[in-house]
Image (cartoon, rainbow, N blue to C red; front, side, top):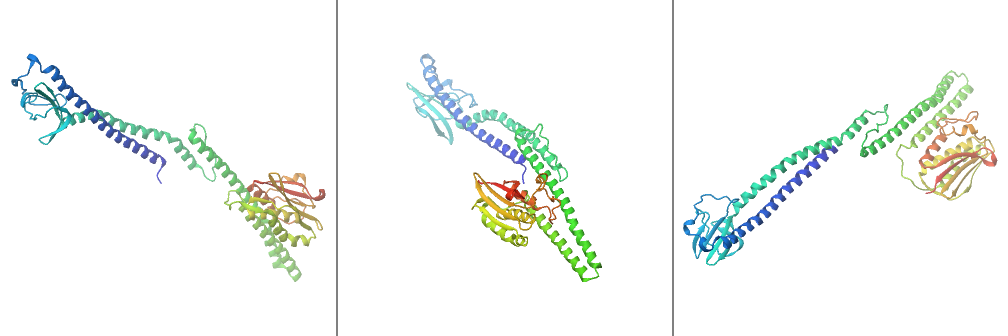
Length: 440
């Protein structure tokens, strides 16, 4: 995995050198084109100037004026020749052999395998022709190009160094944040400092601080959950151990049977608590869960009623579905069934014999309202805010339970963005748990 800084530097440096290479190439071809135009214009201008001013009257050049220059610099001189009829009347470089070409515009000619640029014009019986070897022209272009290229080649590494430096400076906040994150652990989840943080990094730091807050809360909940679970499980397991001791010391079948019944009850309570603990862990919002889908509530309610019917019949409780519309909401079918099952079981358990429990659901504007109502012992006002806490049980109810059922109900409601409240139950007695789901 390549670091972002390295990839950014490679990209920027590669772009810089690529663009530099393009600029170097474009500069050469542009310079060559411009200089070719200048040189072509120069040979034409020299020839026309000589034709007008250089060869007239008494100033006519004679053959003895032929130059004896032994050297020629392309950037300083051109080859100037004056022909009279077919004889060379004047040449600026006697050592250079360049045949008569005739009159014509600027063009390229090949002389003894070498390319020349040539221009010729006539004045009476004289032909003035000015020419220049192309290779000498290119040497001059390369000299000019080298002078232009030198500062460019010096600037590119300087710019590369500046890019390297400023990218490093720009990444310092990320490096600092990375080191601060490395310092965090399960026992140290303090927020990252947000002072002097660049705008682009602030969003990252703010998101990380939110995550750290959630992790800290989840860790605290986990610690509480573990401590509470250990405490709650200790009681039934201790009871099992004591009953085993009693069973071991029992002398009669009647004592043994009584100990076995108590032992089964303790084991059943431990089993229910473990199941509730597993269900509660499953409903933690940090756990992965299946996607939401449209769920019909009535079939769920019918299954729950069927499951609890044996318990309700044992207490002669009238358990029924009433005013239950065919509502559909977006959620997890298994979780919704668990929620309704816990509410109905609680209602049956805390309702005296010959009581009543009613399950209902209806649309209410943009909401879906589901309720489980009973005419049982009810809940004191002071207890209503506590019943959803884990392992909290209402005192003096003589009902065996783990204190986790309503915690599971609350967790499922929060997952479905639902609100849950407790109101008076049937005929002003008992209580009614109202769960309000958003319809859309």
